[in-house]
Amino acid sequence: MRSVKALRKAYIINTNRTNVPGGETERDMLKNEKCSAYFSPWKERIIQIQPNDLVFLYSNGTGIIARGIATGVMEIGDYLNDDGLHINEEYYMPLNRFERIGRPVPSSDINDIVGNHVVLAKTMVSMDYDRGIKIWQAITRNYLK
Image (cartoon, rainbow, N blue to C red; front, side):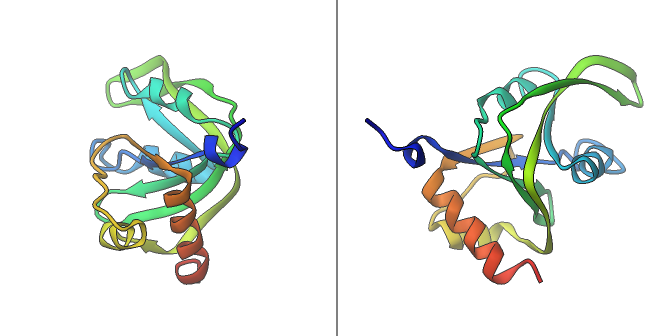
């Protein structure tokens, strides 16, 4: 039988700041302590996140700006942008133990922490739990202040 730890994963979720001028999606995630994705095929990736997975919110050009632990409860919402209201186009998950990072973790530091290059251009990057816990611990030690 596999341990629970072996089943857990970690995810870096891009806040979509580059594609959404003004950063509304990023502000919404931070305010409501959640991770989100919008429109197919990206929104469906939120379904992969399981209870107790580690989740990091990543802002392009800045780095990891927040972290939390997945509730495992995916919800669906409407998304309003300049094109109007888009029904059921946001998939999101509330995060427990949500914390904003005092000093963002830049991509170069993420690579150093996990020991390899992490491509952060995607909406969601998954990694094994052991690499995720390294990021979590580095944030606790060096970035919350």
